[in-house]
Length: 234
Image (cartoon, rainbow, N blue to C red):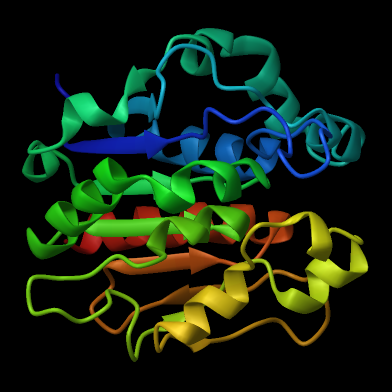
């Protein structure tokens, strides 16, 4: 039996900070948790700007080595998922065929997805077709400058979260980032929320259930569950 839902999962093609040369990629739990949860109820298509291999952030593998068995089993057993991604550009005009577009984080999206016009078109397509747009941590930067057909920013007046400026300062990477997630969301009129302490979990769901954001890696399990519940209510 075919799965009921279809999910488009978007990864970055960036593998290093262009500002410093340090390695980056997608952040392990922010991809693993949504993938594992949603694969139980959906078919998942994984894409990136260039297609092919999308690199995991090596720091995220190290940071979760003893604390997140789900993520490490995902990393061990699913290499084909991120080693042969499709191209975002091939899916423009197909937004109505998916129920969710989901964007894991890691700093990598700051260096390509933040300015990917094909992706902005896809996000608008899905949202205006009544589908779910989801993003977590630095992945929320994909919402930068995304406008709807009425000319308004998608995030305007909506509750949103993402890796906060305070958290960026605490990991000493503010100067290495070409853009800051919180700054961009506020600039577009988003109602930015964050947890009561840095690096604690926080997830926002818009009143219509179709814009879901997570703040940081700790938010990954709750973020995944929020997407699942919004799908099941659709």
